[in-house]
Image (cartoon, rainbow, N blue to C red; front, top):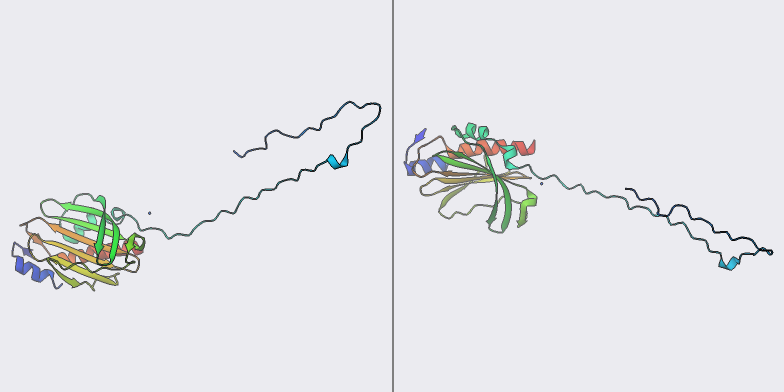
Length: 216
């Protein structure tokens, strides 16, 4: 369905839906003196025995730290985004982001794709280790200047949110979380453009692909 700058109607559609060293000096030599007429008897009290020092190297320990999530641009391609949104996109550009929502603070690894004169789609991936405050979770986005609703229909996700701007230009974010990852799909449309389809459903399709790749 083509929507052409009919903003109220567009939002009605949007809302439902990481050398070995040898000992120097070699063998110690024993010194000998030319014997005199009377052989000398060594003083036992002056004879010392040097103990042999044995050094045992400490055992090497290794930590079985969990592997980090792959980079976003290693998980999703421009072809994946094109299939989800029905238009061609340029190559992904790697980046990152810092986020804060309520008690949560976290970092993300991002990959952004641009359909010229239409929309920029950014896929952001975060794991439990990327959360620096609040623990790992699925933070609810702010409702400021936006329409917010739960997104409980994303395959592979245990929780999620759909947020869309309440006035032009269209900006929207789908946040979908599994037990090991938070995936966000962020949309920024050019002002006044025509766009086809349902951005919510298109974002869900892309998020499901990313979640499946992270789990597989």
